Image (cartoon, rainbow, N blue to C red; front, side, top):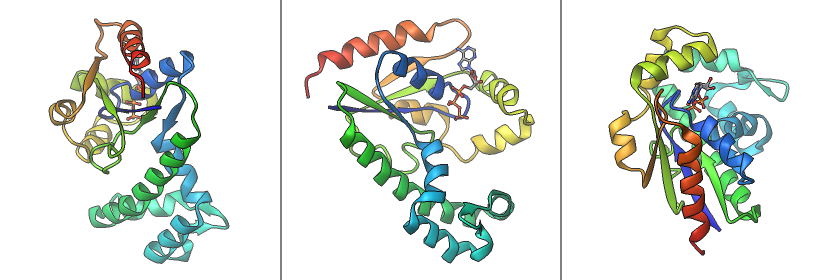
Length: 195
Ligand code: ATP
C-alpha cells in the first residue's frame, strides 16, 4: 500500500484536503489530533512528559493543557523538548495505523511533517499551498485568534517555499483554484501506482 504524506503550513487547508480524500474512501491519519490523544493514552509518553514537566502536568489521567501551554509558550527550549517527546510517539502510532490500512493508499496529514522527521517511510508527499494572508485570515476565522497568534505559530514552521520544494506534488488552495479536481487528479495517479 502506498503511504502518502500531506503537509502544508498552518491554515493552508491540509485537513480540508484530507477530508476530501476520506470522501473518496481513502483513510487519513491526522497527526495533530493523534498527538493530543496519545498524550493521554500512551503510558511511555505520559511518563516522559511527567519526568520533564512534573507530576502536575496531568490532572488524573488527563494532560493539564493549561499548565503545559503556560510553560511552553514562554520557553522555546521546553517547547522543543515537548515536541521531541511527542513526535516519536506519533510517528510510531502512525506506522501502526498504516500497517492496518487495506486501501490502495493512505494519507498521513501533519503540519510538521518535515520538521519532525515524520516524512521518513512515506512514498510520496503532497503539499498544500495557500497565500500567506489568506492562511492568516482562515485561521483567525476558524480559531478566533489574533493575527499575532497565527504569525507566532507560523514562525515555528518551515516557510512555505522551503516546505513546498520538498513535496512531490503541490495542491494550490487559493481563492481561484478548486481543490476537488486537484485531489481527483492525484487520486487517479496514486491508484495507478501498484505497490
Ligand atoms: P492547521 O495547520 O491549523 O491544522 P490546516 O492546514 O489543516 O490548518 P484547514 O483547517 O483545512 O487547514 O483550513 C483552515 C480553515 O480554512 C478552515 O476553517 C477551512 O474550513 C478553511 N478553508 C480551507 N480551504 C478552504 C477553501 N478552499 N475555501 C474556503 N475555506 C477554506
